[in-house]
Length: 181
Length: 181
DNA sequence: GTCTATATACAGATAGAC
DNA sequence: GTCTATCTGTATATAGAC
Image (cartoon, rainbow over all chains, first blue to last red; front, top):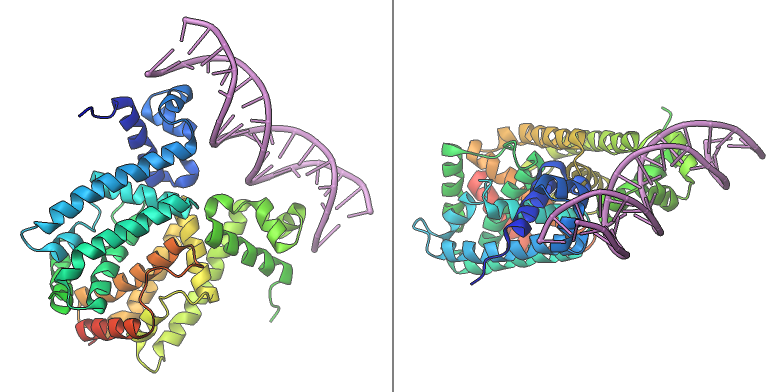
């Protein structure tokens, strides 16, 4: 099992960071190369085009989501609680991959939009057995989407106006009471 | 009461449309001018810079939200139902102004982010008296955010995976049961 | 008010040295 | 593998004619 070259991962990290903090417009190959500490030519050795770089982020997202769904299935407090709690930005690799892919999607990248829709569907499939009916599943998914949306607006670093601590606990209790099977 | 010049409004409409359908990256002054049926010079007579054009969208949003909050206060089914129902994309001027401003925010426009946060706060203030507690208000706001987020991903035109018809009715009933004072 | 023409800057991508 | 140098396209913005 050969893990991916380090420079390649650094480039992806840098690209994600600029997407999240400064938006899609600022995430140029030049800026990415500079932030990753390589030259533009060096970047283009690992990713032959802007499109390849964007595909790299999407592939990384898909891998991280697979891990997350495994975690979710065996979470001690149950999948709904795990899912909502992990919907607030913890700035972990998965959060960053989602935010970065969202930026690409909102910048017009169709593959990114598709990937996000598929990710959402995978989560929905995993949660469905634990919810009462379609409306209950909608409720859980939409609250999660809402949490992510606010994080996305906040720029990924500044905390948005999302519930934290005890208020988050109360929200999860409220959603579980309404939706949990 | 002098209404704003027609050409100016056409330019704003065109700019919003490109932002929503093709993303921030495609919403250039050139593309906007073309879509609005004016030349670049003509556009620049009405909006002296890209920044002025973006401010135009944000100002329009603020006006439309004021109208919406008035409507919400006197809605027959109550503010929560009105608020959630109007959170699914109806492609009306307010929806388009929100989506367009979201694109600007996600493209890195700080004024757009601030405007959206303030809009969200105005809605929260109007809804607070009608909800039980902080968690209940969070629930209503986050479901609404979730609906908008999915519309934003869908590109504004293709319907996203959001509840419609009877499923939307069931969702509203669920949220009201959990949150309504 | 609206147009054309153009200046300036920067994006993505290529070629080829080391 | 990583670099510099450079080509080409396109964005914002200005100048000035009509």
